[in-house]
Length: 63
Image 1 (cartoon, rainbow, N blue to C red):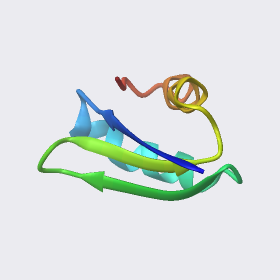
Image 2: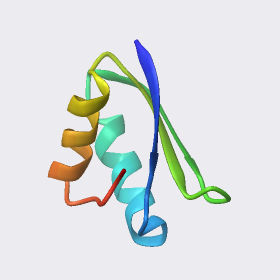
Image 3: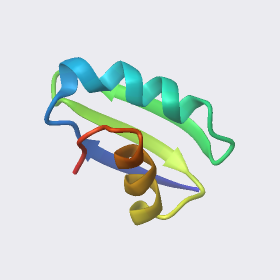
Image 4: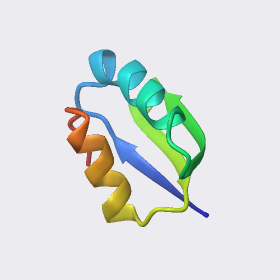
């Protein structure tokens, strides 16, 4: 498992959706949002690029 942090440019509208979406995945063991830095931190067995793809496929702008 690796931990990745993603910036969410639209944090206000995307954070809750991202958290709900990722918590439902078997490949994700931890999800945390940080309103202060407008980031999403994810611990997953997927690679960084795979995790970013999952987030973006959910309609969430992340980098």
